[in-house]
Length: 168
Image (cartoon, rainbow, N blue to C red; front, side):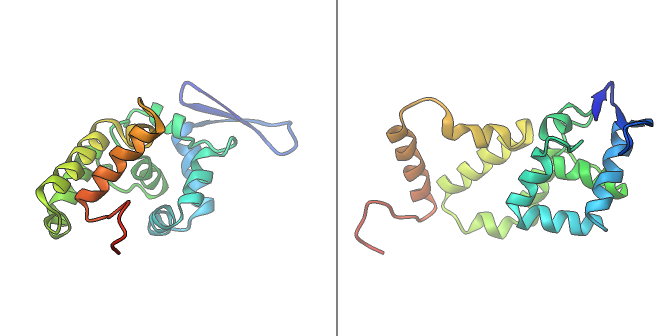
């Protein structure tokens, strides 16, 4: 299989018949074979990180993270794109998704101190602008492993975690 100009050229299992399909149609077909409903797709995406990684990282998958990022709706979360292609679910931008989380889960945010809420809001802003990649890469950013670990520990303390302490 090869993706070119948002088209997929796929040979049949015998390698004799070439089929040309729009990338989105091809993806919709493949996702529908894996998940009967968009609800099942969302559920498995949310509860099985390893399934999500294998779904998006498979070399034979049309919906690799790189290909999803190249799609016209790049401001959308990959899950929203897959659900849209699967069953024409409404597309929401990452910014809309983040805002919806802030408004619908206000009680979740309110349980934290202001510093922790600021960290959560900064992470949501990064997600809204760039997706999950900057958050995942931040662990491998500048500084030594000790400096990064110290920053993570300091951030965790804002959320009530205690490290390096004999207290439970």
